[in-house]
Length: 415
Length: 143
Image 1 (cartoon, each protein chain N blue to C red):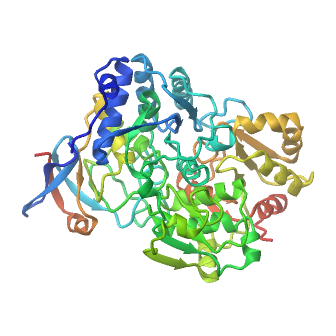
Image 2 (cartoon, rainbow over the protein chains, first blue to last red):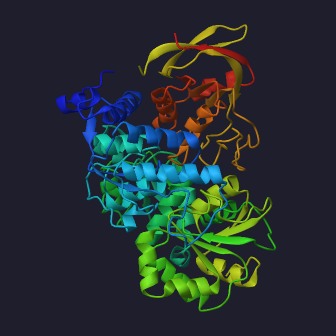
Image 3 (cartoon, chains in turn red, yellow):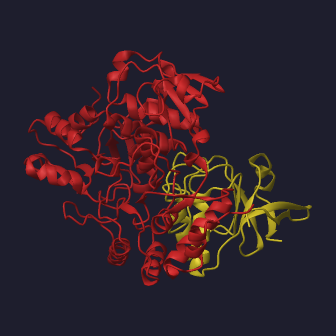
């Protein structure tokens, strides 16, 4: 299939803006051909997942871009790195890895990306408008960007994200095309009791269930009796993007492309209607945990995606000045840290025993103690999904209130 | 580039054409068909190639040096970073066989090519045909 390039795009590819931009353009064009795109689309911003250290290869690639003179051509925010540059938390990365992780973070700043270091850029002032084409990485940010903001992005993996940021171009395919954004199935939660929908855990649990059933298909959630706030949409989307390949969901009456289910479905009958039963919900709730009947817990982790200031306020309210008996990690971005410091919330939380983790999080870098059969409790569908593989901890799932009470009593408490 | 012909051949069997998604070094290796989709990030340890997702049916197995047949890929957008690191450490699969092109994962191979590192090829093969190649000795090449 031929990929048609505009004169401006062809010039980029030929090196008119330097060797770094040409290499980035080759990656964009090769990806476009792989995806069967016939042309490229101009993007207005990027969110870059590539600055997280997974090994020396990523650092070598970023430094190659810097050496070739590559610069971001559009606004580019950065996802988490492997280091907490604010010093709020410490990690156990060995010296070589720490140095390579630092070099990686520095290289992305040299390319002209913003030091946001958060997986919730949409709560740190990076909010592209409805219908805008952008190139975002980090699966939870992608699903929020598409679903809640109504901007248009595919799930840009590491290295394509920075290539799009440098060139300002992306393959014109997938969720950039309006016809691919329509819902094909209905995920009906009307059989789930209203009291359940009011619970915080409803959102990550139904999100995980949605992701497992949807795979990569676009669906519309119907039957909600509760209007979710942004933090709940954040939890739903992150869980859905972890358990499945979800890049976009609609919620009837909630998200911008779904004023109602019929609009999201473009007036077409759905290919399938999944009626979620209370038994389905209970089964998914059980499946969030990898450890059954855990007596003790070794740590609590929250903040995947990164906590908002509102979530920290709730946390402080639930702790109410009490002392925590096990390590409790609360992950966030520096956009929230400043607010925590202004209101003395940081010192209050730290006095209770909370470790605030900034710029990074506990499943991407070794912050928690190395415990081969440790048990971690979380309220995050995404942490529940990734913690066992990335940290070696088994997981127990509960609400934020459950996490706080469990941390105080040093054993699993479900409210 | 996306649809040039390559081949997969079970030892002693017939040569089967498979579209080349990304060209790479041809060779011969044992087939490993994944029983469930996998997320490379969080699912595969980039320093050992071991499947570390405890919920995956092949948890504990190594993917290094195999013809890895993937019925699907899920989850994080860091899959490409994990694949690039496996390639850089010489512990990547010898070849990847995908049900459909996954641009996130394959970026790992495209970047390896830009860096001038030897890298595996990737082929396209429908997931219903993938189990035939499990545990077989497979020769593969890019036409």
